[in-house]
Length: 303
Image 1: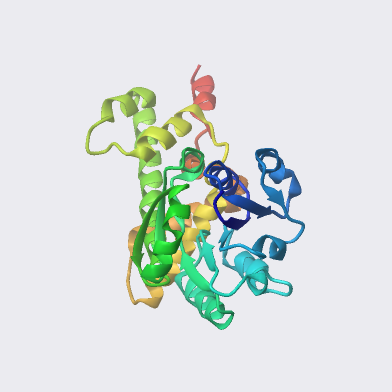
Image 2: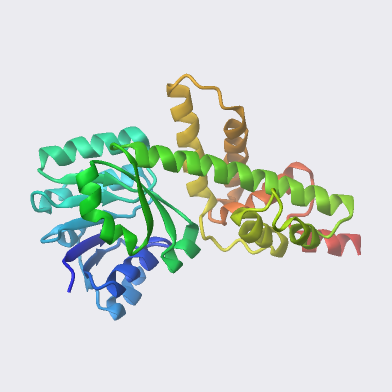
């Protein structure tokens, strides 16, 4: 039996990630604000905790997979926070997407508590979490990474990028590419549709060429089929593009593409689509062009 691990935050991504740890033999203690999301983990044999700090007691590592930086800070370092309950020399692994400066400050607080720290955000969406194929971008001390590598490998492919904060920096770069690619794939499919081509056939024709990508394969299909059940909600994509824009500004960089994409996602969320998958951005482009919100609706109107 492997050592005990704590896990806080078992949402769309966290639940399958935690299940892989149980399957790998770790004695898992889990906490989530919504207890309903813990049923599958209870059935798999994980220990269910009433408070986040309970999941942090007696573990060699505590994994945090919460929605954003403020939520992480509150659960980990607020009144009755989890970090205060951790043993000295245990490792806090924050796998949430948070600003670089938030990760650096969390690491500083952990040092004061005698706790080690890694920022280890992930990419791959719900499918990657389910298949344990997540890209895991890790920032932190090399020895701490070595201590956690086997644990992280149960959920995907961990790579140490550099010191604390660089895991988040890599994730911001990842999200810039993802968000911008979703935007241009949306535009390309809309152009194909309005020009009289079958978007599904266009996607098929582009497979294997330079324009192909996981986003073309997975998210373009969602756009064509109008299937926007969230694997990665648009509201979290907006959080990440906001972070990218703010970081670029702090570094004195002008990055016009991500600025435009950020505005697109901002309007998408403002128009009530924040809970949809981020591939639902094509709906925002349809709004801007005065078109029906789905290709099926557009075809019915033409008929």
